[in-house]
Amino acid sequence: VAKKGKRPVLVHSLMFESTKSSQEAFRRASAWIEATYNLRNTVIISNSDGGSGYEKDKFDSIIGKCARHEHFRDAYHVNQKIKQRLSFDKEMSYQMISAVREWDYTQVCAVIAQANNRIQDNYRRAEYEIELTKLLSYLDRNWDSLKKLHLRHLSLRKGIGVCESNHRPYSYRMKRQGRGFGQKGAGNLAAIISARKNGLFLQALTETIPAFKQEIIPEFKGIIRTLLKKYKTKKSIGVIEGGIGKYCASSHALGQLAKALK
Image 1 (cartoon, rainbow, N blue to C red):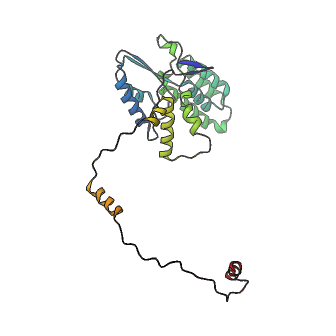
Image 2: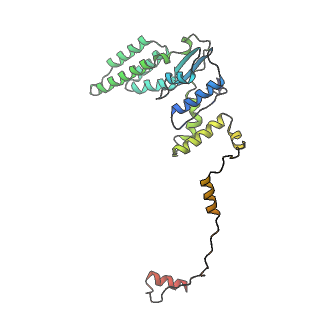
Image 3: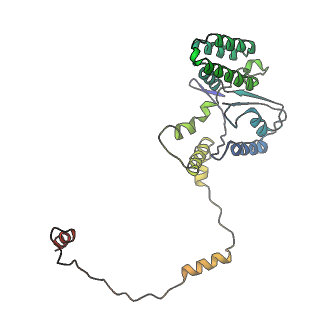
């Protein structure tokens, strides 16, 4: 990871895209990893926003056998989730973010209990209690992935948190600009963006396409013969002349047209 201004960016990154499914993109990434690396003695660090299809087990499946896999939930999305669930109590949302940052589950439970006791709107109490339950469930599901880098006994101290910035080449071009894409068009545009980021775009434009060597099938031969077959031409009858009758009232549309053509 390197710095571009204040924002961290990946070095020598490679992008895989698919508008069909996340499984298709993961399949392509898995095939490339298997063909390129031997990871049996390598510690792998992955990072995702936690969306559907991007859980830790999905990354386990594409990485395969490695010495160790450490998965992180993207901090920006975790903080957004906390603020969303605790929108009725901003002070408690800040305390929850701090508890998660410290990876202190006891403190997390204490914040949940305190936030529940601070609910003053009895009319919406049930709604807020559901929000707290959902937040605790979210943190429970992702707790192992919320553990910070310095707590995992790794030689690295920085480097996690570039998940969202790597979506920008796609999101800036394809989202929130009033454009509409069909699946094929979106797939083509995403593939072009990936090729440019991977340094393969110019190669794809200038590469010679292999000649088509498949033998012509009999049905195709028949179609060609039909298209090339000469037919007898019919004698032309020349230009057909005509006119507009003179017995139309001048106020009528045909009368006006006849007058204009004189």
